[in-house]
Every structure is written in structure tokens, then in C-alpha cells.
Image 1 (cartoon, helix red, strand yellow):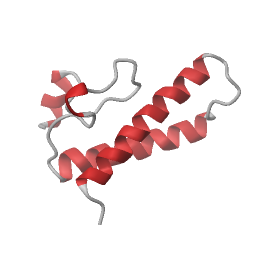
Image 2 (cartoon, helix red, strand yellow):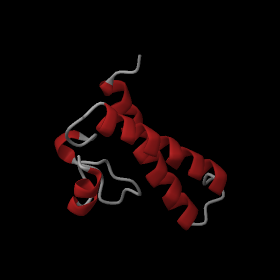
Image 3 (tube, one colour):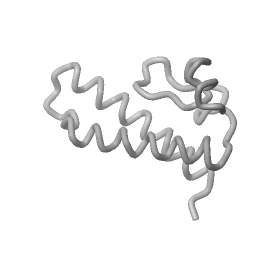
Length: 90
């Protein structure tokens, strides 16, 4: 069984990977993940974040008090704009 702590670690790692791959892509780096892989990883990230916040009722940011990096391409439910949180009833 995957624990909340395991999911948080995976989401942190995934968030940083997505940020780094996005930067590589926009810099024109040939080592950047292709669109299919990036999209697949983004889908996995979305599934994990929904499980953590909706199914498990997790509270707070996956990065703790540090909060999601400002240059991130994805944000946890605690760091999304207020309107998104309200719409999702978190």
C-alpha cells in the first residue's frame, strides 16, 4: 500500500522533473523528453495529486512550508490559485 509520504515524495520528484524537462524543451535541448513522454508523466502526476488530495484528504503543500517552486509547471492543490481550490472543494 502506498503511503501519503510515498505519494508526496513521488509528486515532489515528478514536479521537479516536469519543470526541468520543460526548461530543456524551451531551451531547444535535444535531451528534453519528447511530447509523448512529457504528456504521459503529466497525466501520472495529475492522477497522483488527485489521489493524495481528494481520496486521502491530504492538507498542505507537497513541498511543506517551502511551497511549490515558482517556476514549476505544475502546482499541488495547496498552491493552486484560490478559485481552483474552491472549484475542486478542497
